[in-house]
Length: 467
Image (cartoon, rainbow, N blue to C red; front, side):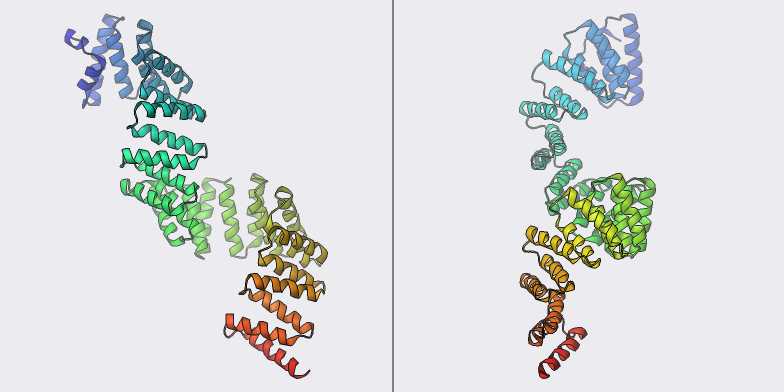
C-alpha cells in the first residue's frame, strides 16, 4: 500500500470503500496482505483487512485479524468491538460478550456496543441482561429504532406483550418502513387479545413487503380466531404459494376449510401438514376435529390418542376423545377421560357436564346429579347446568325436581327450546297439560311451524278437554 493510504484512519478507509464491489474488496485485501507480510506489526492494515473480511462474510478471518490488532494494542477499543461483531456473526456469543465488555470498558458510552451485547445476551437466553443493555443503548441514542425493536422482541419473549407493543410502536415511529416491526407488533397485539389491531399491523407489513410469508400466516390465524374463515383461507393459500411446505399454513388451511364445511379438502391439507410434521399435536387435534365432523369417530379417537401420548396434560384432546367415545356409546371409557380432566383441573365445567351426561346414559343417575350439582356450584348462571341436572332427575323419575331445573334453565335462557320441550312433557306426565301448552306456545313462537310442538300442543289441548 502507499504511504498515503497508510495514513487513512478507519473511518476514512471505510468511506473510501463505499460502493466498492466484491472484486474491488478482494483486490484491496490482496494489497493489505502484501503490506502485512512486509510489516507484521502494521495494525492499521490488519484492522482494515479485518473489516473487509467482515464485509465479505468471512467472519473467522475478521476475528483473527482483529485479534492480532488487540495483541499489538490491547487498548484498541474498536478492535475489540470489531472482533465482537465477528464472533456474534459466528454465533460464538460468549466470546462476543467478553469483547463487548472490553470495548465498553475502554470506550464507555458506545450505544452500538451496548445494543450488540444485549443482542448476544438475548441469543443466550439472558433476557434480563438483554433488556438492561437495550435500555442503556436507548438512553445513549434515543433516536435509533433498532434498540427499541430488539427490546420489543425481548419483552415479547418475556411475555410482557404490552411493553413489547410500546417499544415496537416507537421503532415504527422512528422507522416507519420496517415490515418486521409491524409484524411483531401485530403478534404482540394478538397475544394481548387485540386481534383487529393485530390484523392492521399485518396489513401494514404486507404493504411494505408483499411476499412476507410470516405476516400472511399470522393474519390468517388472526382471521381464523375471528371466524372469518374464507378470508383466513385466502391468506393461508397465499402463504403456501410462497412456501408450499409450510406445515403451519397447511394446518391453518385445513382448519379454515373444515370450519367452512369442506371436510375432504380440509383432510388433504391436514394430512399433508402431518407428513411434514408427524408429531404435531396441534395438527393431530385439528384432524381429530375434522374426523369427528365427518362422524368418523374411530379415526378421531386415534388422533386424539396420539395427541394425549405427546402431551398427557392436553385437556382439550381428552375432552374431545371423551365426547367421541360417547358418540360411539363407550360411556365408561369416556368417563375415564373426564375423570382425568377433573383430576388435573377440578373446576373444569365442560368435564363435569360431559361426565354427568355419560353417567346418565349409563343409568347412574345419582352420579350424574352429583356432577350436575358441582356444575351448578361452579356455573350458577349457566342454563346448561340446570338442563343437564333436569335431564338426570327426569330419567330417575324425580319429575318435579326435573321441572324446577328445566324452569331455571328457561329463566336464564328464554330461548332454550330443549328445556321447554322437556318441561312440557313432564308437565303432562304430572297431569298439568295447561302448563305444557304454555311451553308449546312459546316453542311455536320461537320456531314457527315446528311440527312436533304443534302436534303435542293438540294432544295437550285434548287432555285438558277430557278432564
